Image (cartoon, rainbow, N blue to C red):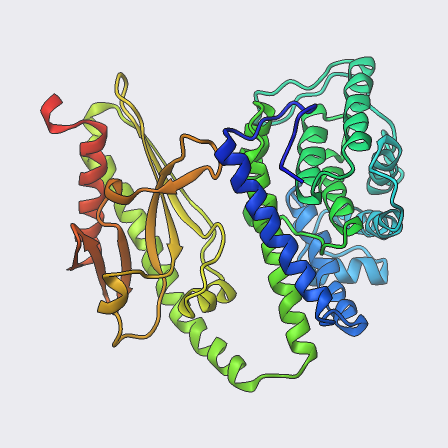
Length: 445
């Protein structure tokens, strides 16, 4: 089944972009089939996995809406039914009502009926509990904080758009579940049909679609908040690819954790645990070094471009987790390992955008590091004119160098085909210099 969003407000870019989405869907589907086909998903394994993830899913979904409860506090609130001291009592109530909604989601997922208006209202009604607006579409105009998007104003407009949403769901049952989940989630947020609980309902519908198709539920965490909102903002403009990209990345995380639960079910591996513990201290050095580089680049860019009234936007993404670091050190690439993004603009000149991300070293750095412990490297990407994936390798347009990694207190960098060594401050200065020259070539000064 080809990736197709016709009949929705969205597009997926060029043919190449749609093909990339199709390949992502194929890869994730294959991993699910291999797990189930090899008998690795025994009942005890599934119970262990879902038991671990249930309260994390509740805590993280509510955290995107402002809740301060930890996973442990969420578990206590749900299982004991008590209000957690030191937090807004509403957060305890939100944990309890979302737990009820997720139980209902599990029951709904057993039905092969496609997601519809009644199911959306049922989930939202349980999420809100006894608060006003539970289970009914709004009649008044709403505004989404921090967004330029204006949802439909009247109940009739909301109803018309939700009926389109339901019609697409019913007419496109064979669409791959990851794409269905992305469309139905983003579209619901675009309509914003409820007075409250739209985000939690959208995330519940995503997991309803995935669980119904035999996939593990995903968790969009509080640390994903900026990227999540940016992707929804792009979807409001019609571009769905960034949101599909995020859902696919979180699906890859869920599959990785489920695969590891299956591995644990076959026996405890002491050497693996020792290896992971040793990697945790090296990970701290890596994350600290990348953060220092990020801050040094910011300082250098401000110094170089300050007199030009340049707009400098820099955002640091999630630091690597232990699981990701271990995979990279073993030579296994990971998806969407974004470190930070740089966007610079000067009036009258094209903007410059660069994304730094963590990957596996390639030549010539791979050979240069043969006597060192395995480690990840930073690569650079530029915006992809095809639209999906949103970024592509920068190659010769990489600022500072095409590959960069930390060895002791120095950075090893591939620049012009050679491996050179820089102090952190020197590398930051090189990167800022290259970006500045891309922004305003010397010949124009």
